Image (cartoon, rainbow, N blue to C red; front, side, top):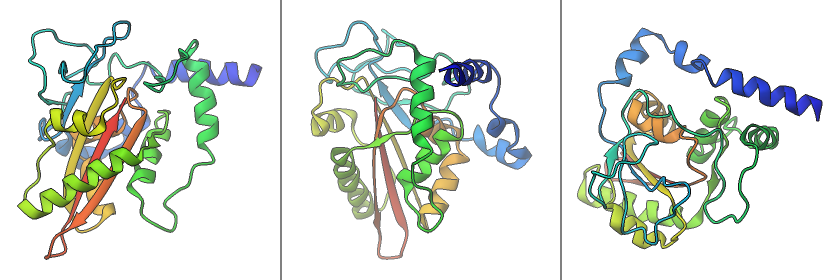
Length: 240
């Protein structure tokens, strides 16, 4: 128990200063981070103690703070530098009945279990890549959800058919998911020649990366579709 307490105290201290990954990306990488503040949008219902009755009354915000002035049903960009400023250490599953009593201790237990997660040593899995990005930043990994995979698959195939990248309509997404307890939804889309190529492009773009490492998500779905020229389209959907 003493080891866990020391670990969680260390987590609290580390989260008060910039992460090594953000300090060591180099000049070229940094120049890419802020060129595209749009392109990834998040729909939030982050009212901790007053869960709304329906996903159709979505409030959008560009940070963890909700905004009463924005209209429901729209995506808002995640491409802001202070996007994670007010994020909790960890959040519970939206459908779980128990609350997180001690965030640091809960995160410590999750991160200890995350050491058994698979890596991409011999194959490329975007879900695994996302969780590797999260765990190396001491962010809880995401659980893959089949429903989100299926929604992402349909959208990836639609993007291929229309030969364009675009985000799902948030009302269509919430209708397709049909889980009223959902507090937060996010969507990333990109295309490239391979999963690795797409992932590197996403991590080099602030808006995409903000969704990937957002502590307020608990689940993820993803899918790809390839066009007749061999270009791979990827859709990621995040839920919290």
